[in-house]
Length: 83
Image (cartoon, rainbow, N blue to C red; front, side, top):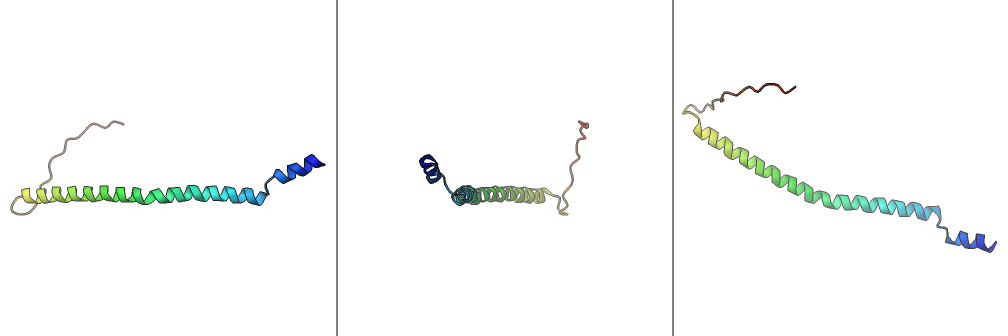
């Protein structure tokens, strides 16, 4: 009887286990959410750089165009299909 009583005292209620599991899950989620803004900021900076490069290239193409302002399409080389 005494041994059974000691085991019952050492056992954690199921509610406590559920709360611990929920707390661990929320802690992991919070960690992911804290790192997300930094990644979004990095992605944003990369997109800004790409847009800037494209704007510069577009400006160079327009400047190199004939006086009529039409950009000529360069001929493309056809590559054999790799399928």
